[in-house]
Length: 123
Image 1: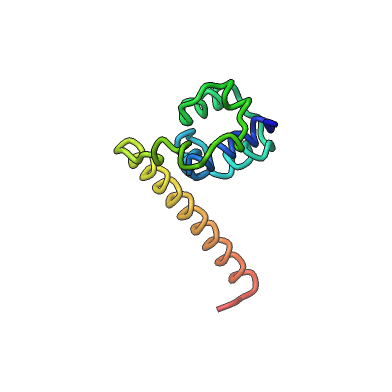
Image 2: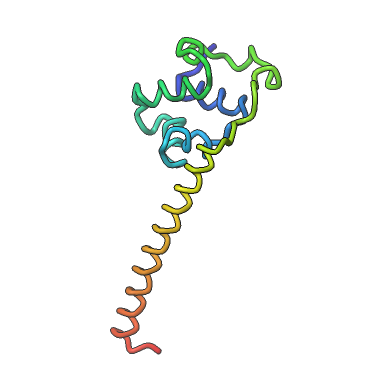
């Protein structure tokens, strides 16, 4: 018996051996946001659903009616998630954004430390 669409997306992703990180990258969202979609904690917009259909190279009806018991994992995988130059560019951008965010957080932490050192006269 088919599960709900979110469960089906997770099962298909796992059968294709795609990671949540890969799916998030392809959907231009964070891994956490993608995880929330799979768990049904975030709404699955029509646009994101269309993108997922495209990534899986399946039609929507097949995803909705998906029953993992009908598939053998090795027969289901067409190929591993490709990493072409476009994908590498996206990954590089994500890492640069993450580094910039971490640098901002570090600067905030440094300011907070100075503030508390001044307040409590610490060395």
